[in-house]
Image 1 (spheres, helix red, strand yellow):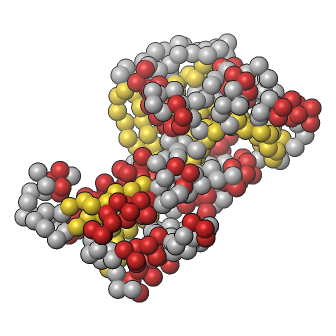
Image 2 (image 1 turned 45 degrees about the horizontal axis):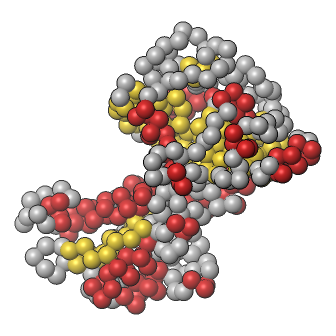
Image 3 (image 1 turned 90 degrees about the vertical axis):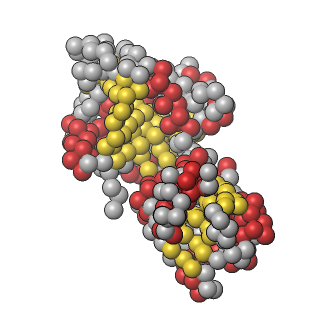
Length: 402
């Protein structure tokens, strides 16, 4: 079986160059997804280098941005291809950088491509970064390289949407994960924790954590559930993201598990300007980093029977701080009040909704009014995927960020 047949683009003899381009860009996008959660502050770029000079196309190089953001995927794939890059086609999910932000790392990816002898470059999505922004494709064309843009553009752009949002809107992508009972509750009536989903859904949650740069909850979730917020899938334990708590008045307990393990997994708390300095000192001595933002006095939907429903942190300011720290992908995992506050400010880009099979009759509603409105909008736009995970149902909803 040749490469093209393996990737399902039609029988031999019936393939156009456009079909090959779609197939190999999908391979590059798959590579790109492997790096999610590892490459911040840089995007996770997937690259495939293919030769078309034989009876069937031959992959001679593959790469994805390395952990920590360097080297870039293009450099890794070119190093793997070596002399076989001469005359080949490169498939890259994001426009190659035309200039380097750190000069000691050597030439830009565009320069590396020009030196390699690559004949043709197929690009998935454009890069709004000031180190690319159309300049990469322009320089390649100016040197006689054929450049094709916009192949699988929506899918390629979605993988690195967090990178784009960090540049264009000064915030990371926000992905909400929410679990609810069959009758719509996130916790029991007494506010206590509730086992809602099964092992398959739990594993999906941990995989989502591994693909995020940071994971965030509200302080009420910490006080109520005392979560660890780490990735505990076998082999992925080292991919636990930064843990973030939105805690206006610094009520997080020193005895909470996230504080006690702050030396092992980075833990940040975002607090209001008026939270006490004494509480901040205690948390910092325990290894927690405290950041402060303004507190807004607004009407806030009250989904939990606790907290001040006329006060919330300035979430846009908080996301700006995270963007400044290089966070491109933020997973919002709890609780309902925080989720509704993000929805009210139109700061949620993706929702993964896990619905368990049990009903409890009464409890803490999982979805507030603002989030319900957002879900209706996502559903009406048609951006929804749904399937079963054991006895649970998982729905993934996305919204365009045009």
